[in-house]
Amino acid sequence: MSKEIIREVETEYTSGTRWVHWLRFVSIIILTVTGFYIAYVFISPKISNEPVLFLHAKMRMWHQIFGFLLIAVTILKIYTFFFDKNKVQRLEIISSKDVLSPKIWVAQIKYYLFLGEHPKLHGVYNPLQFVTYAFFYLVLVALCLTGLILYVHVYHEGLGGALYPIMRPFEALFGGLANVRTIHHIAMWVVLIFVPVHIYMVIFNSIKGKEGALDAVVSGLKFKNKKH
Ligand code: HEM
Image 1 (cartoon, rainbow, N blue to C red):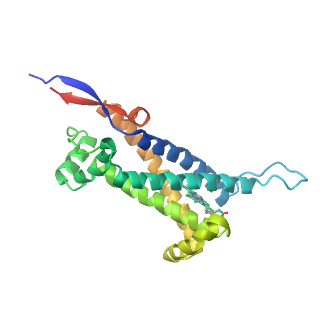
Image 2 (cartoon, rainbow, N blue to C red):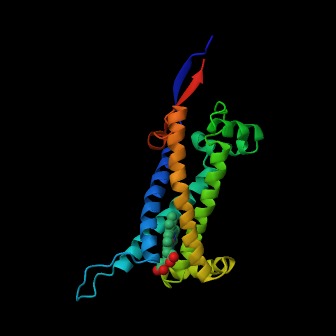
Image 3 (cartoon, rainbow, N blue to C red):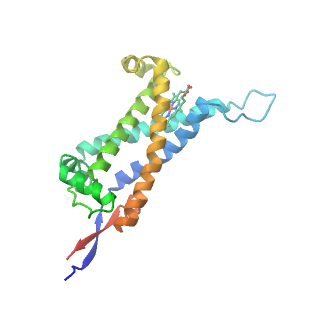
């Protein structure tokens, strides 16, 4: 006899996780548009006799404002990932357990290839997802570090001046200022490749899993299909 499927509502993401997600979303959009502009000035302000338009300076200002927002949410996210005691939040770090299980890796890949059922996970992310997100965070950290190195070379007072001696060893580590700029630019492209794949996978999982995977990043809730 086939088992009945009961849908139970469970909390998937804390409000903190969702806030960080959407602030990062907005930051990435603004940083990409303004970053492209800094790299290649693709529009110019209308001609004026007064030198007051400063479009490049304004683009750079917004780049830095959202750059520091991205730095803040990245630090917050790394802190909560490791130290937050909230039960729902802990599920993120618990997901790392499944990364060490070849059985779950194989089952997860079979699920994506329509060859099997979704494996039962200990945490909130499957192993493939966990490893991809970990790599994405490394790229974000690289963007923040290289961004800060570029920043301290433009602003020599206040925060820029205070961070200057701290960022100099990182600059040497990345192979000098010219390399820092190239790495910052290439890392942007890694983010730009990640984003459409991420959106595709979320929609794929939402439709195939029928558990409201996409809605969860707004509401925090997911429908868990349980066989009884
Ligand atoms: C998703 C994140 C980010 C993206 C996509 C991005 C993109 C870019 C791009 C494409 C450039 C131009 C590089 C070139 O000349 O080829 C740039 C420059 C720059 N970025 Fe970012 N960036 C990001 C995050 C950050 C962060 C976190 C900061 C830290 C405050 C930052 C600060 C800077 C600075 C200071 C410059 C140089 C501005 C100048 O030359 O005057 N960026 N960014």
